Picture 1 (cartoon, rainbow, N blue to C red):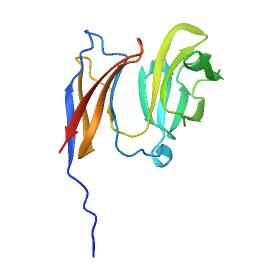
Picture 2 (picture 1 turned 180 degrees about the horizontal axis):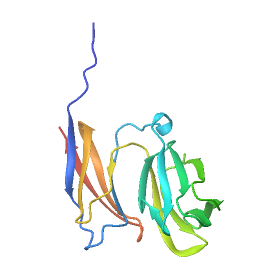
Picture 3 (picture 1 turned 180 degrees about the vertical axis):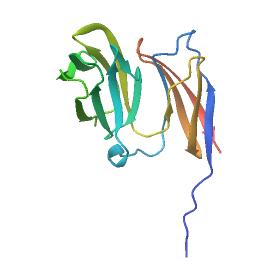
Length: 169
């Protein structure tokens, strides 16, 4: 009788070179099996005090994103993939929540047409092996199955990514 034994999992940790401003960065691993986010708990993408919270929201494709208006005035969520509008929703009421599922992987830019100073990013990924770096660039991606991956440090504001090979044993 064969019993499947999972390979040892490890962490991929380091420090991204963000040039002193890590606000628009996400770090993730390419490679390994894809995941379906439909079974994952929904995540919240809020608008509070004219700021998107969080500024960078990485999610697994298929995860429900609850877009929320935490302010007592009109907001909207205008989502672009490249130059194409993917979503443009008005949220006129405080506490209003609109669930949205992102099925297509990639980087999405987000703005509020009512408040030009508001911007954010949603990064839809194939798996949950990702992290948003701390202010100093530190990141830790936990429970990574053994294997070889491509580590991507992606500056979403500049749409620039640096890739390097990593192996987890």
